[in-house]
Amino acid sequence: MTPINKLVAFTLLLLWYAPLEIAHANDNQLLSQAELNELLKEYKLSGVSVAVIDDFNVVYSATAGEKVFGSGDSINQSTAFSTASISKPVTALLAAMLEEQGKLSLDDSVAKYLTRWTLQKEQFPNPEEITFRRLLSHTAGTTQSGFADFYKGDAVPTAIDSLNGVNVPRYDSPISLAFKPGESWSYSGGGYVIVQIALEDLTGKTLPELAEEMLFKPLNMVNTTMYQPDSPIFLQNVASVHHDDLSVIQSGYPICPQIAPSGMWSNALDMATLIIEMQRALNGDETKVISQAVARNTTQIETLDVVGGWGLGWMRLEAKGNLEWFSHGGSNTGTGGQIMGTMRDGRGIAIFGNGGNPARIPVIETVIATVMEKLDWKKSLPVVKQQVPLELLNDFEGKYLAGFGETIEISKQNNQLFYQGRLLLWSHIESGELVYLGDGEFGVEGYPNRLSLETVSGKKRLKVSRKGSDKVSYFESAPE
Image 1 (cartoon, helix red, strand yellow):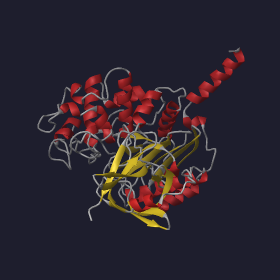
Image 2 (cartoon, rainbow, N blue to C red; image 1 turned 90 degrees about the vertical axis):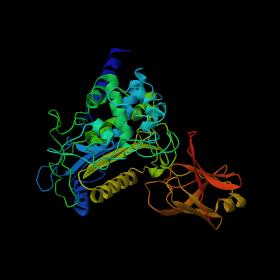
Image 3 (spheres, rainbow, N blue to C red; image 1 turned 90 degrees about the horizontal axis):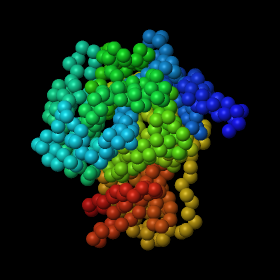
Image 4 (cartoon, rainbow, N blue to C red; image 1 turned 180 degrees about the vertical axis):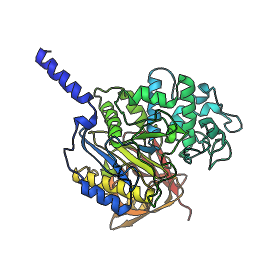
């Protein structure tokens, strides 16, 4: 390499490693300040933080509103929000990185690494079945879905107290099993607390220490932490959580002893940094700390059961614009957000708001829809010129039970198939066309999976599959 080329390469490297807030300004005015302010006013949300990624770069970042509603203290690019369940993919990344370092195996039972707490036979008759992989993909069968927040002055339980069902609102007994590990899917924050204890016991470091050392500091995510508001090194520039009426909830700063499932604080620009690091890794480009193997391992689909797609920490059920996304949402009382990145081509959105669900969710949905429309982020389902066999159309008609217990009805109209119901656990009841993709498979706009028909012992069922994955699930025929 010539001296000039070396200088150019060094300069580019410095630019790439610079903080995103400095390296990338608002190249596209996707949403004006006035538009953001109007959204906050319309839905009664105190504040918002947004970052948009296109072609592996932040092309838009903005904030609006106040840390405390009515205070005049404005949210800025450094203001952190309680991110709630967006903590989960970060925890999964730490576990996968430790596996890459040879310190654990994701397919090991966590019992092998636990010293301060054990899987009791009464609750876990076969401890060897409770693996990191199952806990991180919500397929271990563990209970304790989510947790109540605590505030300064409360009797805050430890993470181990939480697992034992001691001093934890919502649960009065130890974490246990709802089904045999590996046989279904059920969202379990408690499963992530088990992972938290195992990682801490293995490394001798707290989860906040691990996150700082392995992810946040190397990626220069200076406004992100897993330390809690009762820690002397907690962040100073943070957004308070709010009731639906825009009053602040107690001190405004929730304390989450269940750090792995819900204890992280961050903002849109820092989460954009993480998304880009993941996307560069998936693309095989040079990265700082996340390898291609770790990125692929955590986004690989572990199950399609019940929810329609889940990896290790990352949701794989999103299909906005018919694109493949890794994503996660977060919702603690009075705060939360959404982060999402495409598996290819480096597109993404991170957005946080400090307000209740009725205010925050429509603002998030509006911003995402606006960004996708203005940047034309949409891919059409493949057009198949092959005519759909009439027999296949007739066979598909009927009612089917989704994995979450609701009925989907498929009917034929003018040699086309239409559905009514919910194809995904968290979607609305809706109707739409089944688009023929060839080889007996159908797709749906904005739905990540493919549907085909199987007959077992004379009874038909819908097979749910995903291109590029060997995982399958089934919607059984509904009883007449």
